[in-house]
Each structure stands twice: as structure tokens, then as C-alpha cells.
Length: 113
View: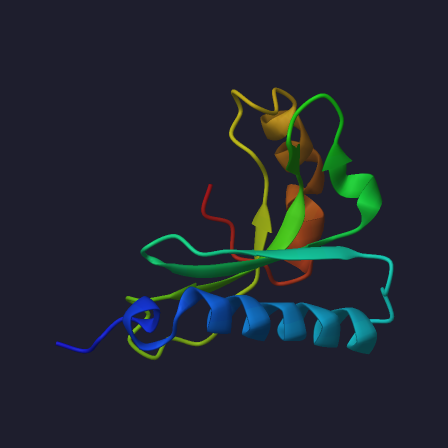
């Protein structure tokens, strides 16, 4: 059995690596005003990137591009996900998805939910 990313790298190392990766993407995409942060649950790690306008008012949340690093990826290609909070936290979630779904499909996103 292969060890997980969390078993190989300590959280401080992942935090440093994801902070660097977030800064790299912001520089490459010329979006230096965007926010970035990492999340490190047991199943892997996530980097979230989003413009300040995507922070949700009234709740502790945001919409973001998410870059997951899964412990179970088995060498799968990297992916980019659109992160939206659950409908309970963000009631217009499904309405927003319905509006942007055609644009995401044209941009070659694969829609799972």
C-alpha cells in the first residue's frame, strides 16, 4: 500500500507548498489581487483561488477554483474544480450552476454535480 501525501509531507510543508503554488498561479494569470488558501483534510489537500468579489456576504465562505491533490489519485491527471458551498450555506447555489453550466461546458469543464 502506498503511503498518502499526508503521511509523506507534514502539514507545514504542504501549507508552504500550496502557498507557493497559489502565488505562482496568481502571478502567471496576472491576478495578484486574488485570494488563495489551502485546506488539508485527511483525504488529500486543496488549493482554493478566487477574486475578492467571490467572497460570500453573510457567511464564512467563497466561490473558488479548487485544485485538489487526492491521496487516492493513483497518478490521475490534475484537475481544476469550481468550488461552491453547499446549498444549505449558499441557497442560490443551484441557480448559479444553471446559469454558468453552458459556459463551463464550452470551456471543457466536466460537470459532476
